[in-house]
Amino acid sequence: MEEELKERLFNRKENGWKSTNLEQREEIFSFSKKYMDFLNGAKTEREFIKKARKIADENGYKDIMEFETLKPGDKIYFVNREKSMYLGIIGSEAIENGLHIVGSHIDSPRLDLKPNPLYEDTGFAYLKTHYYGGIKKYQWTTIPLSMHGVIVKTNGEKIEINIGENEEDPIFTITDLLPHLAQEQMEKKLKNGIEGEDLNLLVGSIPYDDKNVSENVKLNILNILNQKYGITEADFTSSEIELVPAFKARSLGFDGSMIAAYGQDDKVCAYASLAAMMELENVKNTAICILSDKEEIGSMGNTGMESHMFDFFISEILNKLGVNKPNLLDKVFCFSKMLSSDVDAGFDPIYASVSDKHNAGFLGKGISVNKYTGARGKSGGSDANAEYVAWIRNMLEKNNVKYQVQELGKVDKGGGGTIAYILANKGVDVIDCGVSILSMHAPYEVTSKYDIYSAYRAYKAFWRE
Ligand code: MN
Ligand code: MN
Image 1 (cartoon, rainbow, N blue to C red):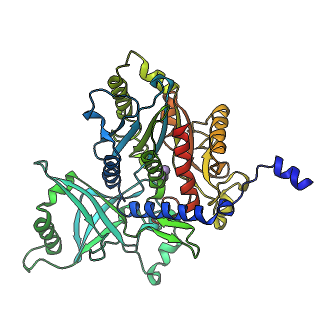
Image 2: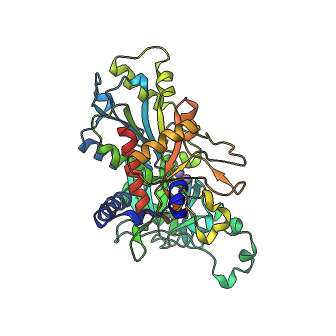
Image 3: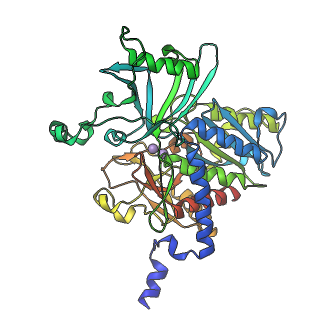
């Protein structure tokens, strides 16, 4: 009797795997396999966009610039400087009734090369780095790193770099001090154990074949790069080269229930939304998928969400639908709904003290919904209104998507943000809705396959609403 009452009244947050049958598990695992394969070839924002564009092309999407006019059912995209992208399907409903937007980011914490990176010290050649996003620096030493990016020469020629992903490739690494001599280092605070300025990448040790030249190890490296890519040292100044972990995405655990991979924040939500969008047809409200850049450093820059590029894309839709008029863009945003699809902190029992168990997200319990983010009294969060949360709950429940409503951590333990507030500022109803993750921003992040599949189903349901 009491059990029945409990069943009816309690907000039970059950493990999602419990209610899956064999067929559903196979579906979850096969979706996860596709995600891992994608991730292994998309470790940077440029690589992600390149692959996303190819997938979109294969699924009947076309660059919006190729359209003279648009009509319901048209599938469009816009690629912004090879680093961010918006996709859409024109809905049957008048566009002034609002868009349904799912927005994620595809940049992840990493190490970038400095503009003048190469130097030699005591027979070693190094590349200096400047870290990108919030990292715990000690995690980035003594792991295999691969090099990805572009070097653009003054004549406009663009050289793509990808070294360290193939088994035959060399990798790079940053050394750390042996414990035997680390007495002083070990006394330091964890955050000071490795200084940012010491994140120097070891890249060579053979001197150029001329004993009378100084810096001949550096010279030898430049000679190799010149022969292979036709570049000189100055060309580094117009490059964007990122160091990312050379690890592959792998299934984690005896049961293979989880995924360990680099860059899951936020490529996990980006991939889930992209996959969902590729299966959409005939939507009511115009469906928009945002793959944004620069979130990890504050969404600034013209490929970040703060840029007006997104307004331009939506204006282009309004123009090509032949409906544009003064202030229509504002009106469209005011009637729009959005899922800010970014990862959330998963409850980690080893570090339980930073989470409020009653309000934490657990791996395997479905997609994570955050009413608010922010820090110290919700500061900086956009805090979705109760009416919208109710609408989201109804949408998820109707479609049998398991979800959990949570917050990032205990009050005053820290905090974080997403792109949610940027769209909320335009008048859009926004809520954070993504996958919970362990070891966020580490070289190897952990997610649950169940949650990834839940996210994919949630995004699809949202767009179909
Ligand atoms: Mn994120
Ligand atoms: Mn992040």
